[in-house]
Every structure is written in structure tokens, then in C-alpha cells.
Image (cartoon, rainbow, N blue to C red; front, side, top):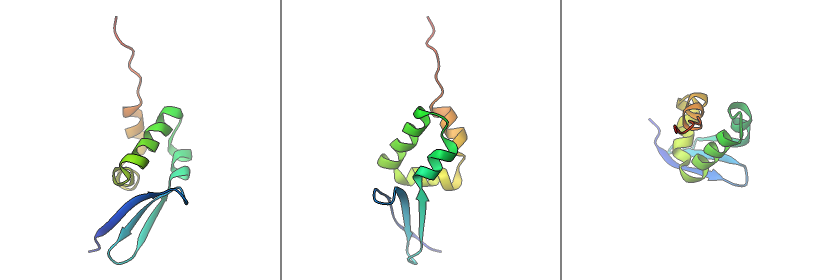
Length: 82
């Protein structure tokens, strides 16, 4: 079983890159992901936050989760009650 060695955002390629112990690599094109799943500025902002602050959580969301469900949940505006 291959072990994850590193996960980081590469500003030159605009990709989150995961490197494994067998020297294989997964590169997630962040621009393509945003164009596909983000419907508005708030959703893009949430993805950007994850990319810069927790690239491993971003990679897990994209590879194993449902980004559209996640984005709807975290960017839903709830009107304050009077």
C-alpha cells in the first residue's frame, strides 16, 4: 500500500499535488474544479480557503467527497430572525 508523503498547493501549476511513497503523484487542477462545481463567488471563496489553508482536506473532498453538497451546506445563507 502506498503512503502519502506530501500534499501541497503548487502556485505555479494552480494544482493541489499529492505525492506518494512509490513516487506516484496526483495533481488536482483547482481551476478546473472551481469551473465545474462552484456556482458563485462564495463557493469559489470556500474552495480557495481550503486550497490555501488545508490542501489535504481539499484533496479529500474532491477525490472522496461530494463537493457540490459540501459547498451548498457551507455557503447557504440563513436570514437572521428578527
